[in-house]
Image 1: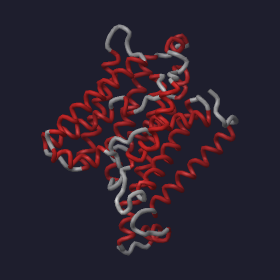
Image 2: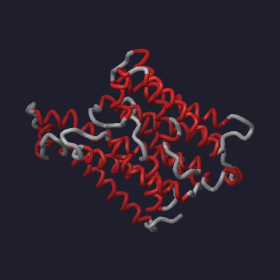
Image 3: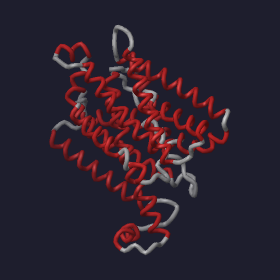
Image 4: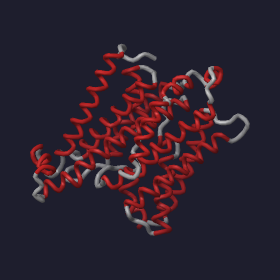
Length: 335
């Protein structure tokens, strides 16, 4: 598959323009919302802080929100690229891999049985749940003589997602108080998240971004087919294990901080491939930038739809992504 941008020089220029657009949207996110702020207020919050309400909002809410939105968007998009490559399924994404459902189940269980309500504790429990869900999917998909195949991985993800979702719903039905405490998290949002939540998982996310780029050549080879990859000397078992680990870190860290934000991992890789073709080095780079742009833009839009209240950004991404998901599913092209 060839993208609409052919030359390497144009790809580099377009990627740089995308990064500038992401930075611009992050800056716009800092001054957008119910409370009126300006560029001058945002700058003075860090150069001449006077304790005003607007400056406090900028420092404690708007700036962390913009940074977290960009980081989560990058991570979810890159995880979608890896998942679609190793499953050769164009609609593969974190929510279909069971990771979102696993994180949600563990958080609801912690609220129901342990009475936990701290967002900081939610983060670590969500990270743990996402990791266990990902490992379970890998183990289930690897069972049997055939080992781990794309279709088995996809089916294992669907089974685990359904199982965790059913158990979660069962607990919420019997625990209305628990529903109230985790509903905001289950919707997926970057509102009210602090940098203190992002800091513990950021090293894992950044290392996973770098790891994904180093894995690009192997992803290109594997996309030709597992038999071809083996014939070219690729250790497919080790490759799939490493790729799955990166997905768990990217998805687990993202879900732990912002909750289950859907469709970024489905939609963005297709936009990237449309622009630059199927070479995974470019697809990963472009997906990261586009994912950040999409999530930050969706978060900005979410602030104005029902002002003064806000729509969770997970709802916004679902609105954007659902029509595209239906289009991809109807095409029925599973590579």
